[in-house]
Image (cartoon, rainbow, N blue to C red; front, side):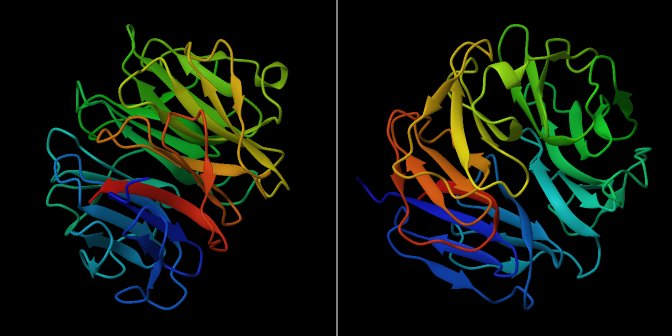
Length: 322
């Protein structure tokens, strides 16, 4: 295996970890992250593949060398705790951040200054304070943005974030864990929740449940990733519960109609929380469990290797070419 890429992990209490050689060796970055930083979100610049943004409870940070060195971006305390990040693929100076308490913020200067957008998200829910778990920008129409909220459903803006609509028709479970967009014809929007996965073929106006209890080995749906070169293929992570004792990586090749359970080299020690892809190599998938295990596939999920090191609690991962 050629060690021609880097992996970055965002963790709870340990800031970021970086491997410059495909997971063989690892460095924990303390500076400039304050002590016990929780990094909840990582995002790769769409036009500068070595530029990575990291966000969490201590602000926004950026690396311009694939995660080897980091610096703070913007003023400390400019945002509440960041839970999700996305970058406009057409105008990469525009960033969106989803926070807890639940809100969406927009920056037009690469994350240096931020404005809070007018999204009427619930202030309280069954878990206490809602938070924005997922943000997606449509690469074909970058003024269309979706925000998934745990627990208040999915919101959509069609004017670049100025105004928002709450999308509720058919989306009966508002506990949104992840949102993903596939460039099928028509485009398909996916939303995972604690008990179900929903699909929309009309940009979120209406939703249909997939019925994962009958199709998946475990009922708790979490991370989602569309294969970079084939929008009909979707990878998903699942588990028993938020802190379940096991998890799986699943793959559909027909937009969610049927699913394959992908064989990992060991039984995952918890819910598979997230997955990372990159257009530089559409067959490379990085998957991670909530409790610190990392798995890598170089052949679109047909086989996997487990990274030897484990990392405590992982909340985000990306890989970038060297």
